Length: 384
Image 1: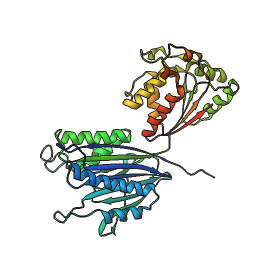
Image 2: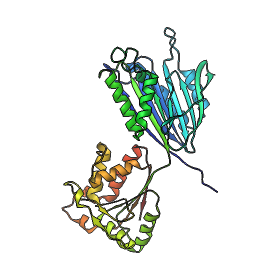
Image 3: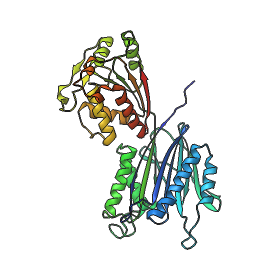
Image 4: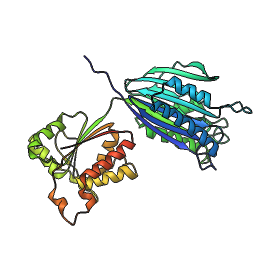
């Protein structure tokens, strides 16, 4: 019997604040509840503090209800009954777009007064049959979808469509031009976060650097999970060396080895040579090595310490060849990460000349895991 496919949902988002305001009148909530991911985008009426509060209440209410197990119908009904309508302008005080994607590809889309979401299947448009339903005197557009590996979606507020009004385009960027740009950009293979940032970067340019409206873009991608297994340090009991190396080689996806002693251990157990790549020599981080069948072999603590910095403060530079940047990039590319952390004590780390924080291997791995979880990664740490 074939095992049902369980997809990974990767999410990125970017926002612009209306010029002259300190708070964004749009709000975003990304909730991973059970076997699904729920993205909610809301646009509060007007701008500034009032709009920010209205939009935040909308997204937080939806996210909380989903997290507590409420059905989508209950969420929509509660939002529709709660959000008032401005009597003067006959506009909702807060709009929303809600997309729930299950790990098996089933998806539900609900839109209330926001621009229609854009969906695609790799480089092609994905037809969406929306139906209107009245919930609490509010008309909500809904669609049930079946998504596959490579499908993607973009949720947005009307600040995206208004970009350029009074400047490059008198009527604004518009839905058709914006949709064409999104599809062309997504086809380049960029990540959801990169796509969201490129859309808002062009919006800022169209606004002449002074956004005339709050602008929000949320991008989602459905794909087969990418896995990475990293062996960090030898096991405490040397009798477990063959077992640990065997587990590493059986793992699907990327295989990484961290530590000089660990690299020699793996090479010995596999009966393969290990060679150092001196072309990637860098002042802050020792160079990587190579073993056939292993995607990346690095030095241990100095490299991991630098990886922790890269993940905590900024993204690794694209194309950077040093071992830490390469490892950080692999970790960010993966969706499910398994650290096998050996408890063997390295005598070199017992020297009083070694900073205490560099000697705490377990703590550094846990810090890296926290950063990765903030990026939406699933991380498992196993100690041997």
